[in-house]
Length: 340
Ligand code: TXA
Ligand code: MG
Image (tube, rainbow, N blue to C red):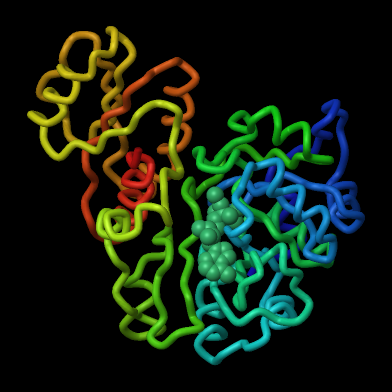
């Protein structure tokens, strides 16, 4: 449980997107209520939010991100009772999971209630709900007093921002207020779980693992492997969570060396995110040693990709991560980033 006073323990500052003048959390909450956009931190990544009670503001989120209109948004709520007001059906299972994992990085897809505008759900019959644990997000949601639809605050398809330094100028310009609380502790997006079906199915792996959910919900429906989904429905997915640089997941040192040798990239334009101690690296290839702990890896990943992009790196080779626990979410993001 997070209390309002917790916000006083997180250093944060609020500034206007247009001219960087300072503001307060109250300013940001009031702006949401009156139909403006606010960038706010969560424990996973930064979000670009609009009140669900202001459909035209929600529409602007799609415009600013260049997001396809058929891709629905997650609605952020302050607590379970706010979630119940948004959902048409709040099942015992949803309640158990929320009691266990909220506030935190688990998004529950449930039947959509009558107060949710079409623009939030892309016209679909379900709504994705999440109660974030970041103290600044909790305080904002409480003060705003309205559900907040928010995707990650990146241009559609690009890497999600995990700090304010990652925000694109277009996103900064569109935000009435930006709440800067430093780097997000999680680093990758929430787990999305469809609880409208039995057994429930993970739609997007995240920091809350299948094993953790199964301990509460029982066995889950199988989540198909990203490669498999890509091969079966290439039009549906496409490249996502991707830097401008080409990403190649490599399964062995030989594969990496071969990829490097045939890349045709000039020296200094190739990076290799390594999980294992490098035996050797070819000249002209930048080796970045990534954390061996999956949570630390997740926290570092997007910042690393964005930094390399900004340095003009054109090819990023990544050691294939393991296929268990939190690593599964990291694999998912890397495989999507590597689609072309
Ligand atoms: O950690 C997070 O979830 C972050 C922070 C800001 O909360 N948000 C985030 O939102 O990652 P976004 O929009 O970048 O990703 C939301 C994902 C998308 O893959 C979207 O298709 C899926 O959730 N989604 C949203 N509503 C859905 C629904 N009703 N049914 C199925 N999937 C849904
Ligand atoms: Mg996103």
